[in-house]
Image (tube, rainbow, N blue to C red; front, side, top):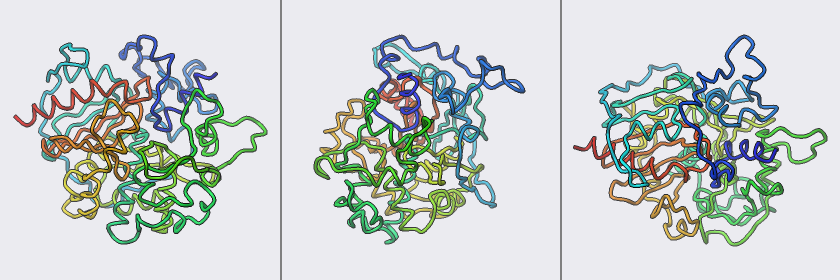
Length: 433
C-alpha cells in the first residue's frame, strides 16, 4: 500500500525523491512496458486486468502510467485552456536523422540519441532548430493531438504569467503576499514577499518526504483531489483550504527550497492580480496568441481550482511553440506575445548561492527564477522540468528547443538527468556544426 501511495503522489507533485524499491532494482525493459503491447484500456470494455482507474490508484502505478499520463481527462475533472479560433501557426519541417548522434554516457560508455530516448522511457520528443522541426517522434499510445501531463513544467507556465504581470505593472513582486491574498496572513506566507514565492525561497513547514505518512504532501494531495480519500475524511477539501493552514518554518530568503505549495500560492496570486482563472489567463495571454493546434487543460480540485503545481496537460507541438517563444524573447507567430523584459528577467536567473544549498547534484551551477531552472552555462540554457522526464530545454546559443514527454518509472529526474543532459548537449553540438 505504501508503494502505491508513493507512486500516486510523486507522479503528481514534482518531488525530489525516488522510490527506494524501484531504485534498488534493475529498471524494467522499456520496450516491454509499451502500453500498446500491454493492452491497457483496450477493448469495449477493457478486460478487468487491463483497466486503469483513479479510484484504486492504478492510474499512477508504473507501467500503467505509460497510458494514464496521456489520458488525464478521462480520469479526473479538468479546466479547459482554449486554443482560440485563429489560424494555427506554422512549424516548418526540416527533418534530420538524429538517432545515431553519439555521446559518452555517465558510465563512460558510448550511447546514441535513440538509446537515450528508449532508456528514459520517452513518450514523445520534438527538437526545434532555428524554429524548424528537425526531429519528432511519438511512441506507444502517444499521438500529436493527444495532451500529456507536464507535471512540474506547469510551474514554469505559472511563473511566466507572474513575470508577465510584473513587467506590465499589474503585479508587484516586492509586495507581501497578503497584499493579494489576505487570507494567508496567519500562515507561513504572512510575512513573505511575492518575489520569495516566485523564486521558492519561502520558509514554510511543508514536507514532500513521501516515506513519512504524516508529511504535509499527503494532506495537499487529498485536499486537491489528487488522492482518493477514505470514508469519513474530515481534512481540507480544496487547495485553498490546505494553503491557509500552512505554518512558517525557518526564515524566508535564506535558501532555495523546492516546494510545490509555492506554485499553488503563486497561481492564487496571479488569479487575484488578473481577476481571471488560471486556465482563462493562459488561454488569453499565451495559448490563443501562439496559434496553438489544440486546447490544453488543467487538473482541478473539487471547486474547480486548477493545480498550478503540476496539473497542466498539453500537446508536444504546442509545448514546442511555447518554448520557441521563450527562446525568442516573447516573440512568436508574428507578434510580441509576452514582454521581452519578462523573458529577460527569467533568463537572468536567481541567486546561485541560495540554490546551491538545496543540493541538486545533477544541475550544478544552476539557479531558480520565476519557477524556471537557469543553467548559467556557456550556452545560456534555461528549462522547465517535471518529474518522470517532462522537459522544455532551451539552448539560445544553439538556437535549439527540445521538448520531451516521458513516463520514467522513477519520479525524480536525478535518475535520468545524467544521460539526458549529455544527449541534449550532443544534439546541440551536432546542430551547430
